[in-house]
Amino acid sequence: MTAVDDLAVHRGAELAARAAAVLRGNDTGVMVRAAPDLYPHQWSWDAAFVSVGLAHLDPDRACAELDHLFTGQWRTGMLPHIVFDPDEHDYSPGPERWGCAELTADAPVVPRTSGICQPPVHALAVERVVTLAGRRGPAAAARVRAWLPGAYRRLLAWHRYLVRERDPRGTGLLTIHHGWESGMDNSPRWDEPWSRVAVDPDLPPYRRRDTRIVRDASQRPTRLEYDRYLTGVEELRRARYDDARISATASFLTTDVLASAVLAAASGALAGIARGLGAAEVAELEEHAERFRAGVAGSVDAELGLALDTDLRTGEPLRVETVAGFAPLLCGGLGTAAEREMVALLRSERWTGHPGLRHAVLPSTSPAAPEFRPRAYWRGPSWPVVTWLFVWLLERRGRTDVAAPLRRALLDELAGGSFAEYHEPLTGEPLGSADQSWTAAAALDLLLSC
Ligand code: 9WN
Image 1: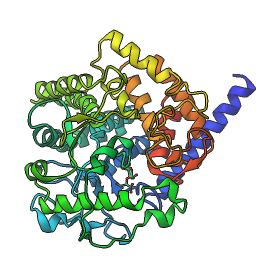
Image 2 (image 1 turned 90 degrees about the vertical axis):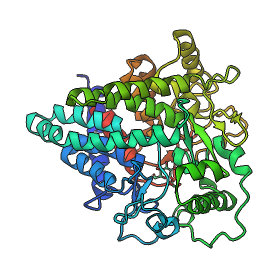
Image 3 (image 1 turned 30 degrees about the vertical axis):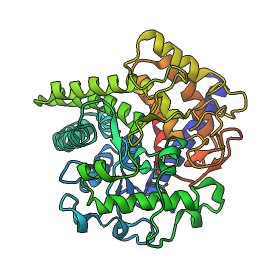
């Protein structure tokens, strides 16, 4: 090992130790807050990512994190996008605003939850927790093995909910009821459908926490955007969170290619878990994986070369160049030539090869697109967790050739050690919340898994 290698190892160890400290610092004892101040509750896909970070430190704590999320699971099988910390009252929209337990017997009374969901990365996280526990020795592996059957039943109910309620016609594409369900809140993917949502004139007043914590308002959604998001919540409340009623009445209703690709990959992971447990649902889960892979592959737009969401209220594709368009790379399903073209696009000047980028990671919107805004929430900045998801699932599919440069660039982006929620992609400046839990989890996984 040369002195330079030595230094790199030392810096990596230091960064990993800092990342571990971030996860410990955000841990309330029963859940890891998504971020120390901005997001003081447990978010669904954050918890899955966080469990992978935790698995590097303490696999039992990783399982407990997922178990806490499962306590919020609805009777329908839905995993809600937020499980609220009962001791934290200053977040909007909070449990009273969602009013789930008051409006439907499907929601748990304890804990309080929101009434929507987020991309189903959970089975992928569990697959990884099991692998990482295996590396920590037989005792840790045995404890996670003992935990696995219970987690499997929860995940199966979750996947069955999505397939049954969010793709009732078997198209292989998930429907979402709110932009927040995509996890990419005000991505320009959703500008068109939100533009048709008239703000409820009787919208109850609300006090935002985000703009008090992130003082630079340009990094967060605007007032009008927030009014529309909360109008969306009012509509879901009026439908009493009933999926069929929402499909019939909600103003915002779209497909989500990224969530669909995640479900395809996660169904493959869950089928593998089912096989290992000797469960009866292997063929069903493999069929889900196949159906959603095909749905995602079928959404690729010939002109843009990206997979597109569809506005289900107009039937029109949402023609915006966002990172979600690379969804087929997460789950496979394109033919060899089509995948080659998509990888070439990813490496091109419209994306990671853009000459202005500070690091060759994935920006949330193409820097060459008219919608690109480098500081605005989900409209241009790069999210470490998103690049990590691509690295992880590309490697899982054996595409280490595509993943390797992304992995290196992401480690460079993370080297500053602020564990920011997102970065200005042209300067690398950390933005949003510092010490975001899923960014720390990404750092731990990248540093400790190679
Ligand atoms: C609303 C917690 C969550 C992430 C989402 C991200 C953001 C919330 C917000 O933070 O959403 O749910 O206030 O903007 O968009 O992906 O899960 O980290």
